[in-house]
Image 1 (cartoon, rainbow, N blue to C red):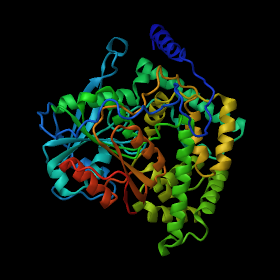
Image 2 (image 1 turned 60 degrees about the horizontal axis):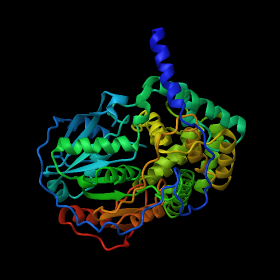
Image 3 (image 1 turned 90 degrees about the horizontal axis):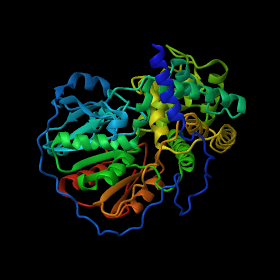
Image 4 (image 1 turned 45 degrees about the horizontal axis):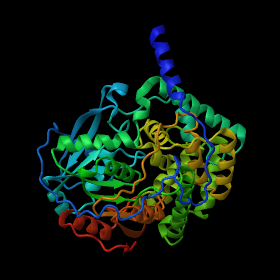
Length: 517
């Protein structure tokens, strides 16, 4: 690298780091009605008046160049079986790197997937964590009624830096291994210093590699990508489904482009009222409750004979991984991967038998199947990069080292399986520059009716968060699924039927509708 370019890259990092990097962490007590950069307070309801549900059409004229990708997509679906005549198409869409072209310049290519034969595009936005949005949309298509796929065409989107959307790969492999495998029950200052050192090294390398592009990987710019997609699809309104944290992209889109909002369903959503620290702790509580639900299920199943209570078994696996790592047919499993694998297994209720068998096999000396929840086939080796950078760009909270130690120790003691994991994800953001402004609160005065689906036992997003979001929207309608996993659409026949009627017929569910497990 030439001296001139090296100096330029270092200067770019110094400019980014000039943004205040630390702030005292807020309390994790329930939020009160106050405004501030770390608190998102829903606006008052009722001003202006409610909007009616937008029509579906017209169909529009797409300017996107699609190509067949059926074979490769089927290989990615890992057990899901599309109908024999189901075809998948893929494409790339160019979008501006940032809304301020003078500052950022250039473009980014966003990966898309299309499935269905209907004339109305229905965009699917997934979490930045886990499998890419295109793969999720393809999997969702295998769970939706055929009638819905004859009326609509699902359009899956790989969010910036993830999947095939110019995936981020800037964290050094040694730091990535430390961050993903770090002991979730480590709580001493010296141990956490090791985590912080890897986070600092990862941040420095990514800032050098990405330069000023680094802060364009966030929810705000993803919402702008959706507007570009709407234009490319040639439709006047964007009809969309957001799962989990992807729901936040849609509420941000609605604030930015209210006249472009079509029919939207939010399948799980982050709490819009709690500050980021309290929200993360609530996520850890949700994961603990979902694991307890898994334990209850396991105790009543003949094919889940673990020998010991699942919580005790997982703690034993963590001790084994801490002492000598858990053997697999490939690389041994580290403590952080053990707990991430368990969390991944909890996200889909249909995976619980497989999770139980994997835990039993790991206890007997072979953690290969348990490792498959985090290593095969997704998330990709660089999934950490996109998740970490997007998360850090979306939150104003930065934990100074002394505060981080207190938070991690408290969460590990209160929430022994998952508290440390969620606390560590906050610590990973400590060296990253704070964004220049907080995300807007999701509430707005002129949205059409929006069903917000909650899942009683969601390991990532507790149901209370979705209920609060629905209450913050002018016409939010809560639909409660009493099941378990991350996302209800395609898993609950009751929820799927409600969503199908909402999009296809414009039928609104009764407020507070409850669907059985």
